[in-house]
Length: 348
Image 1: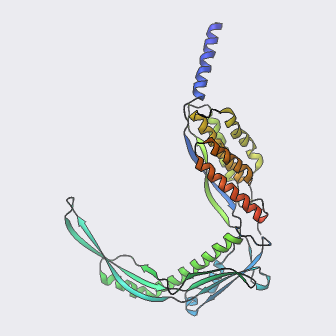
Image 2 (image 1 turned 90 degrees about the vertical axis):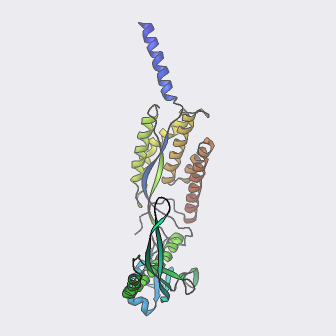
Image 3 (image 1 turned 90 degrees about the horizontal axis):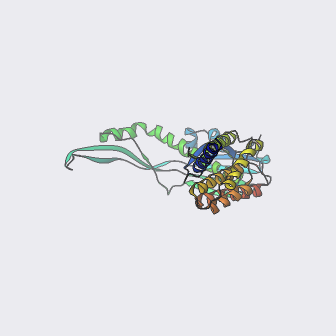
């Protein structure tokens, strides 16, 4: 009886070892959503400030879109807008000119229909209105008398082309432009005025603001039912995904909820140490990757860079490690520039 038990135990040990030492494991991307604030690349002193906006638009522009609407579209996200210029440390100024139509014409497109042998069996013609015009728009970001940024969005030397839908008759294409000219030009004014405001706002926010970011990112998950680590690893990634998705632009990830996950992923390289065994290498890769992500979203860039470096040394996907390290060092630089150590801020 004892011999049978010993044999059974030995066979069970062999089977367990065989399962644990699967030649390789599949690694998949596991997506999650994330929320945080981007930090300014050229922070002001003080970091949080008041700003004002100024729109100078011709009468024709104002017939097609109100100055108020354009002003409302000029924003430095995360900063406080004021109507009092004397209270503002920064000013966004947008100048809008007129649209000038330089050419309008009907373009023809020929379409040949061929049979299987390549013989042309029919010819179809399609017509569309092509309109060429110019528009003037420029922007300035100013601090007092100092111009921090100056850009021309559109000028009279730069042609803009509008192309209508296609028609089967030339006359229909010509009539479309002639009958809808005023409506279309009004739309051009709105489109380019708001686009100019958006570009100026984007530049100002990138340099000096705190934009709310809502995006997607990945963790690494294993998919190998024959490996002992499959279920624990997948459960840990599922818990981590939930913790990451609990973040908001104002609320960081709770460190206490991920401490045990950090411990688990740190245990993987300690358990699977063989530098040549594919399954071990892949498990270490996934663990290092996830550890770097955890610390990146905990706003601990030094630790994020540490595990990214270990990922590079692991050798499976060096580019992933280099990318994670670059992101971590950029985050560290942003913290140093702003003096702010979190991307989750309550801004009133």
